[in-house]
Image (cartoon, rainbow, N blue to C red; front, side, top):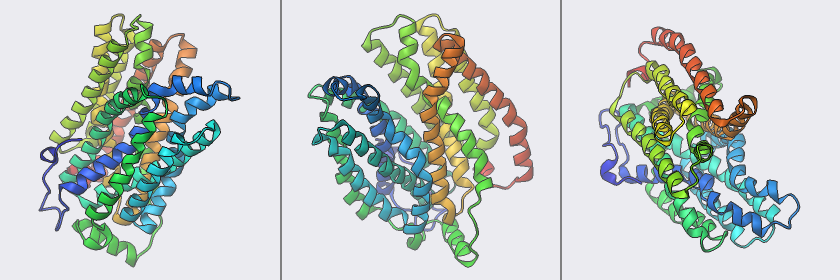
Length: 417
């Protein structure tokens, strides 16, 4: 997590009573919890498989311990968004953070593999609500450029924490495959702090646009604007596939090059993570025109894929990974910022839920897409290169669409930030 000095200062011109930095730190930390679930257990899966080798179907069930929370999150995030708008952001966040800790630590005492998988489904339910609430509250508390920077910081923290959690999982795994599950207890520390430090956006009136949007919604109820968000969510699914390709497949790409050292694999993965974080930092430095920049960001990601596809040496593979991850570090906060800018206060929870579901759907299908490409082309590098060509095609399609959108909506906040 960044120090408070790294957080953007509140924009007093855009909000009447913007909360301080402590709420932002708590929301950034909460946004990292689903990442913890995604990578923490990866180092101990082989030991877990050995422990449950006598259980029928363990070869398929043990990997589900790692992946099923993401699938659960994908399916339930839209419903979590409805609950956020109906029952309140802060209350739901505090409750589900406690449930996250309880469900996450259940495997410490279970001897049933089926029970552990069931508990992981419930962890995904809690993660869906936590991620949706954190994103929604960032949209509620802040506006304008400050909101853009916090959304970028959210993705940057999530990317950086993945490497940290992977290392922690490996270190704790030395004490046994159950040990990493203790880290889920951090939710019991976060929940009281969230209850005390997070203000209530619906009544506190932090952002001027939030008060206006809420009053408008109460005066004239209307259906959720699905069409306004559909294009961004569809693009986010593809963007998540692009985002997760290098982190998920890097060890296999290195193995194809004959690199077997775990130290080298860890170092290359860390370099790629740093590039992603750097991209998120760069996002905070450029504060306007993210819609028109989308095609260029996809081109940058595609360039990285194409370099990976032709790489016949470790240095060239690293160059391709850095190019791609620099692009994805810029791409993810751009998509999230554009989505949040299109939502009114009364729609923000459902919108954040849909965007979150779209992103984690992309995470879930990413390895399946590359597996299909590998089966068709014969090797993983060619599948990555094919994904690069598809990314270029998406960039080409976006060029006229983004120009048309800017011309039809010249004053919209998404283009003016």
